[in-house]
Every structure is written in C-alpha cells, then in structure tokens.
Image (cartoon, rainbow, N blue to C red; front, side, top):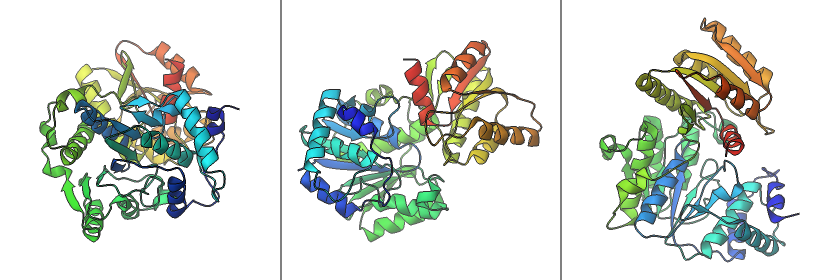
Length: 400
C-alpha cells in the first residue's frame, strides 16, 4: 500500500475527539518549528481569504505555506508552498516520517489531523516567512488551534455544522472566536451584530487588537470580482497590511488569484460553485441573479447536497428566489450524500408549494447529470452547478 492509499484509508472521525494538548505533544514529537502564523476561521470565504493573502505575500517576495481544506481532486491541494501543491514524493516521504515519529503516540490521528501533521512538517522544513492555516471546522477545538499565532482573520459566520458547533449563531461564533490569541491582532467581517458582540468580547478578554472589515472601504476596490470575493480580498489586504510594512503588487496578486470551484466558469456559460450552506447559497443566488441579468439568459441548475446540510431550507431559498428552467439532481460518491429520492421529494414539495411546474431530472452519478445538462443547455441558458464541494470536485475531475 502506498502512503497516499494509507492516508485515504484513515478514518475521518475519531470515537473520541483528540484534545489539543495531545495534538501539541505530537507537534513536539515531530520537531515542528514554524515562522509567523496567520489563522483563518469563519463559515464561508476562508479558502478565498487564504488564497488572496498567500498571493499578496508571494507577490511581495515572501515564501508562504498554506494549509486549506477540503481538496477538490487531489489531497495534495491541501498543502501548498507558494500556492503550489505538495509533490507526491514529498507527501510520501513526510507521511512515512510522521508515521514513524508518532508510532508510540497514545492517540490515532483522524484524516484531517494526519494531513495537518504532514503539512506542518513540510512547512517546518521549507524555510518559510509565513504560514497560513485554515481551520477545518469551528476554531476553539480545531486541530489547527495549537499555535500562538499573531494574526487571526474571521470571515462571515452563519449556520453550518450545527451538530458540532451549536444550534444558534451565538454558539457558532463563540467556537470561531476561539482562535483569538492573547495580545494578537484580529481582523473580522462585522456584518452580523450578534457575532460582532461575541468576537469583540473575546478580543477584549485576550487583549487583542480588533480591526473590523467595515472600517475598510472595500466596496471601492476596482476588481472585477463578485461581492463575496471582494470581501475576501479586502480581508486579505487588511491582513497583509498587518504583516508587511510596504506592500506592492496587490492589484496583480488579487487579479491573478484562481480559486477553483468558487463561481468558476469552466466552459462558456457553465459555472460551478461550492456553496453548500444557507449563507453561501444566498450569496450564490445574488451572484446568479447579477450574472443572468447582465447576460440576459435563463437558468438551469445541477445540484447535490450532503446529509448534514439543511436540504429543505437550501431548496426553499433557491425555489423562492430563482426561476429555474430545469433541475438536474444527482448523488455524489460519499457516505454523506443524500439519496436521489430524498433530493427529489424535498425539491418537488417546495416547487408545488410555490406553484412552480419546473422539470426535474434525476441521475445516479454526477458525470451522467453533468453530461446530460451540458448536452441540453441552449445558447440562451446558463448551467450552474452547486451544493457541495464534493460535487464540484467530481465535475472538475471528470472534465480535466
């Protein structure tokens, strides 16, 4: 078995969550030493912030390690040096090293934790100026929250992963704010009053400097990117300003950032987006409405959702706000996928409730669904694919 195959067979979840003190012991056992750290949490936009900030720092001659999740096609995408994925050779050799050094550890790392250890060893060996860490889920108890970073960035916070983080926005914000360290700097999206109060309270407790996104006139940024990417770009620019005395090439760094699977046009009038929770779907709809208004075209929608997302609510938002010519429903290759019948029943009920007589086509695989949707798309239509980063990854892999 190759190391890559070994990694793919590691369980996603542990029976009991490994504590941060145990993770810190493993970090010490691996001999990890890192430079300046930037920690990014939030519900949506984390990956975009990491990508923009990485490219700004790289454009200013800094060497940057970036740890993100999930990947779309290859696991290597999670571990980036100057935005270049770790090579298969490095992944294999470092995985062997991690296994050997943690052989006597009392805990068994989960899939995410194991990749985190590989990334940290890779970064520790690479003579970097900065390391950017994206939280996996939450923040306070996330495996990435084991370092004393000087800068935290918190993107917009909404309802997601409620079974783990809490059933209300306050509880979720509390978990995200857990990345704020003593005497650090925190940049945050202050668009939600309740979230603001929780982040502000935590920052005061930690004697942290607080910088709100609303203090920055990001709407005036002359970037041809959609609204949520403009927010992510603004958070990244604010972050770079805290890290470097003189910043150059911001415009080029932002414009040259490619973040796959986020409102990405992969073919003419075929757009993929990984929006998968209520706030992200609302942003997606805003972007769809702007695009079809500009292009004067109709909408077709290919969608799949995983089980831990609020399927009925997501469909309700879509049906209530978009006039869709045809829906293409599919399942994905994951134990978390909703069945075709679950998707169909939920969508059909909401269409009837809203008095919409829209065609629904169901397919067992994303390949079948995408191929048929692409084949049927007319010149006056745009096909949008949405609902899960797993779906987007499958579409990209099938069409690369």
